[in-house]
Length: 467
Ligand code: GLY
Ligand code: MN
Ligand code: MN
Image (cartoon, rainbow, N blue to C red; front, side, top):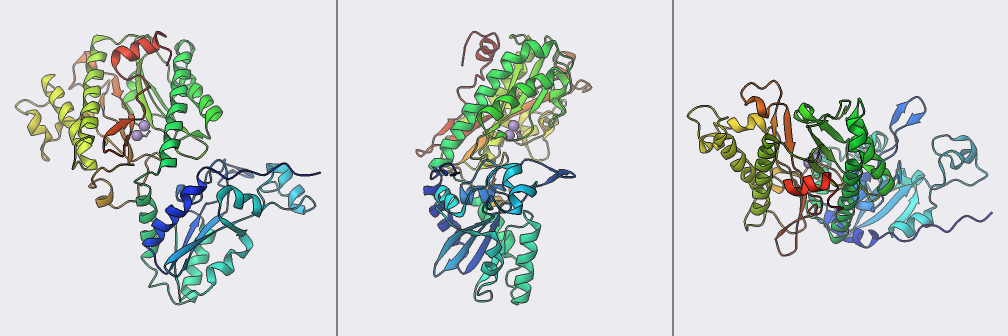
């Protein structure tokens, strides 16, 4: 029978030519090969759900589970590049693949798009993957070639072999690293489509936190209450988005002091706070990254509130710093540390005779005992976005409109840390918000609607405010 209507042009398609042109500017005369990656085996014939490499997602606008084993090629033509998306189009319903291929066959995993459908969806010229080899080999020597490495071993080996045969292995030696850097640096400044997707990711994450609050009663009654919290968020992430941007941290009490606590197998006890670090990745694969530290009974104890307020003050200091002109990315961390060092000094936690200023000096850093991680990272398709960007383009760079990043200071007082007063031991607080620099240079909390001030958090947990 007739097949259903194919997909419509995606909202991202209009943004792709500018992204390609910007990347191409750095690589005149170089063929750029950007693979999506393929399925990853979980065991035997069971694969993990497919999620494309973020550079591929950015350059094609493809999200969801589209499209394993695809490769985007930007081919140099004069001073520009022409994009072609190579992928495995669906096989006919009378093919062996349709019935017998459990990994790719339509009867097993559903229909893949046709060439025409993919072209409509992305606005890109599309071709069958079995023509990729010829396309990569064409005119090699006259053109150089770079590949995003570590994504698709088969495609990477093909590129390396072809470069060797064409005698250009040496001239291309540094190109792969430069391509990875360029793709990451391109994402440091988000376009309007991307910022809209970030807003959607934050909205879905907000819903996820609402679901967590609704689950707290059950969490407190369950031997693995942290799993109840994790599950509540996960359900929303799948309902509203593609899934999680990263494994949820649901850390009650002293578990909050294990920064990557993702086992989440502990109880949620009355009187404790639970630190939840979670983000929904929407269908376009952009993710939020939010942490809230929630008093499970709806009230902070006095020591909990004291720590919470110090962390909040540090976060807001970083946010205010982001609004100043001439601010570099790394200055956000300094702003937060200035507050925490001061508070820790006031509480008598720094060694005797060490002032907050001493601690902030490069040789000091005593306060870092209780705040070991960074305060900010770029955010987007990857939770730690743009990680391959050169330092001068990221940590040392000026903040500019379109940048999206987190502000996430914390204080972590382990139960076995005898340097801190007993009343503070066994609690960890992190407050993590997502920020965009607006066109006027001012920062905006994308996550402003998710309660973060202590009174608001208490009212939120107690069900007194609905958002
Ligand atoms: N959720 C990872 C991070 O906050 O960086
Ligand atoms: Mn983060
Ligand atoms: Mn986080």
